Every structure is written in structure tokens, then in C-alpha cells.
Image (cartoon, rainbow, N blue to C red; front, side):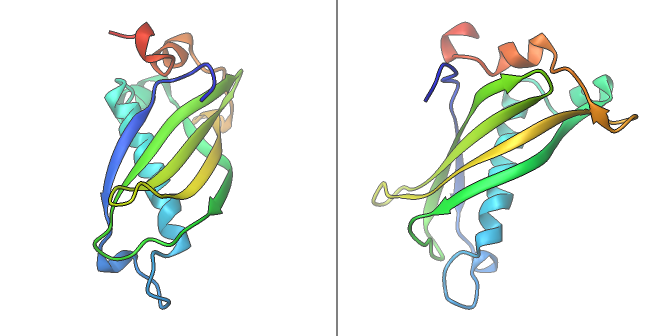
Length: 142
């Protein structure tokens, strides 16, 4: 999983609203789950909306790549495993795996390129060192 091994486990219970006409989880729902997992991971590391608002900066999605391997169904218990793979000056790459807990199948793998923006000027901003440190290897944080 690269140098950054600060992995977050986000639990999901599939509900009927997640299901499409074909009887399995709609593709767009995975994107929402990935975003929810990223926000939850950030909050756990001390970077919630309040902290980003104080900086007048925040993350916006530049691109998503997602590969669907197996369908998920209503009442499945899933886990979104996510970590920040790498940082650049004004962006990061976050990876995700969607696991079904009952059989440990990896249902989807994905990555998102997040850009760090100055929200007043709507231009890229340098990612502060304290954010980079917060998401580095588990051993580096207390």
C-alpha cells in the first residue's frame, strides 16, 4: 500500500435506497460511500470541516477511477478501506477498496485525485505539512 499505511476502515450497511433496477448497488452509490469514507478518515485525523474552514481551503475531486468487480446487494455488510497513497504540492491520491465482510470479496477498487484549493480564490493551494503528517504511516502518529 505504498509508503503511507494510515488505513481507515469505514463500515457500510447496504439499504434498499442503494439498490438500482437490476437489484444491486447503483454505481453512483459507491462514489458517495468513497467520499463519506474520505471525510470520516479526515475527521478521525483531526481535519473536519471546521479546521478546513479556518484555513479557507478544502479538497475537491479532480478525477475518480473505479473498477467494479462484484455486485453488492441489499443487507450486505461492507467495509470501505481507504488510505492516502501520495501527496503532491496541491493534491493527493486517495485509494479505496470495497470489501464485503461475509466472504471478504473485494467488490470494487478505486482511486480519487483530490485537489487542494484556496476556497476564496478558487485556485490550487499548497497542502500544509500538518495535513500530510496527519495521514502518514500509523506509527508516525500517536
